[in-house]
Image (tube, rainbow, N blue to C red):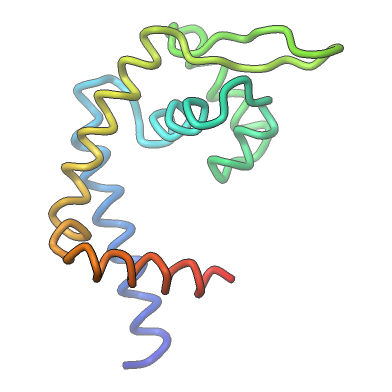
Length: 133
C-alpha cells in the first residue's frame, strides 16, 4: 500500500462521513459546518469568534458570517466578555439541535468506524493522532 493510497482512503472516508452527515442533518435545518459550530461551542462555552474559527477550520471572516446567520436563526447568542471581548453561547434551540445532531452523526459514523471493534477504534484513533503529529 502506498502513502497516496492511504491518503486517498482517508479522504474517501471523510467524504463519506460528510455526505451522510449532510443528509442526516438537513431535516434539522443545519449544515455540517453549522452543527460543528454548535458542537464546538458546547465543548468551549463562551468562545470568541476567533476561537470558533480555529476550532472549526474556518477563517475569522467566514466564521463571522456564519455566526451572524446562526444568531439570526436563534441558535447562538453574543454575550459580553471581559473588557470589549464578545463571546458566544448556545441558545436553548441551538443546544437542542446540537444534541439531536450528535445522535445523527453517531448514526452516520456507525456504518464505517462503528464497524470496528473497540480495540480497533482505539488503535485507529492512536494512529490518526500520531499521523497528525
